[in-house]
Image 1 (cartoon, rainbow over the protein chains, first blue to last red):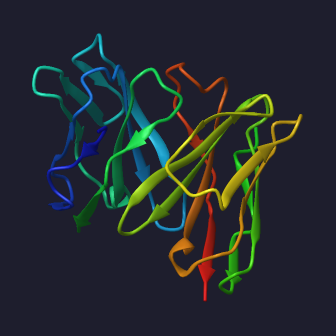
Image 2: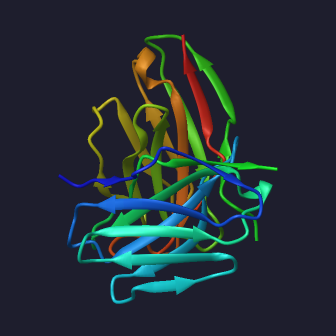
Image 3: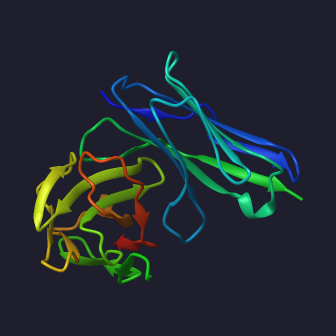
Length: 111
Length: 115
């Protein structure tokens, strides 16, 4: 079946360090991948996306890497700040009507 | 432009009751999706509506239903509530949804507690 999963459920980093959140997906037909950030008491918010014809995409302090060979997705956050503390979800679409979400990784940023 | 608005923010119900949750999408967005979020199961897709039609449905029992109005506003209903229905219910909107590759815009959710 379809699944999007995460290697690490919890990640703790020091303020100023870089963070890497990993995600594995199983549907090789998926062609659109998205990272969302969810802060306490709020709904998920879009961070960055990438289409399957790309390997890397950069935003402000964030980079998403896609490795289709091993069906792996990662989110890199540069110079992690306390405001980055949240739960991060990877998500995928395979041309269907629904976006499938992974289990989520909680990021703790230590001051 | 206003974001996705969900009401009410919190709900407390007892087993056997029914509940209706409301979602107003971002202006101009025609696709509305609903998700159930629980600590154990994460974000689970419920259904997606576009132009008042349900285009896709997740693996939930028939007690979960929804509808969309001509102004794209959507409601979901859960009948005969069970303890396991306690969750955060999230609504998300996008311009076209469906097979297009679009990001979702989420509301803050309705936290439902079933006692």
